[in-house]
Length: 144
Image (cartoon, rainbow, N blue to C red; front, side, top):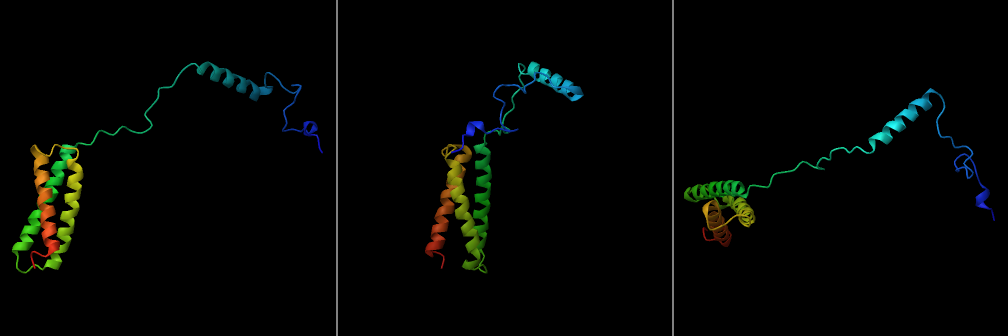
């Protein structure tokens, strides 16, 4: 076996501390000493902390509900216009119905943050229910 305590070299620390010097020599050494002294004096000073990420304001659910109501009512108006037009086929109405279902589901998620009995929440709730009912009627075949 090899005794690893006898292995030495440049990368190994000097056990007796013979090669350690307290100050570096030359012009570079002087600059290094000044920088180290400057760093030691700055250790006591603290830097102001900043937030890790910019702080986002809370979502305004009333505004989201208003936008959702506008989308739903616009889609319901398109749907009504398409139903009134005798030249419109049921196949061409499919994308509008799909979008109505999607927006009704989004509206239900928004309603979980808004009072659905008052103000815009009530309008969104009624529009979402109406859109869901109309989508069910369309899929069931009530308009064939």
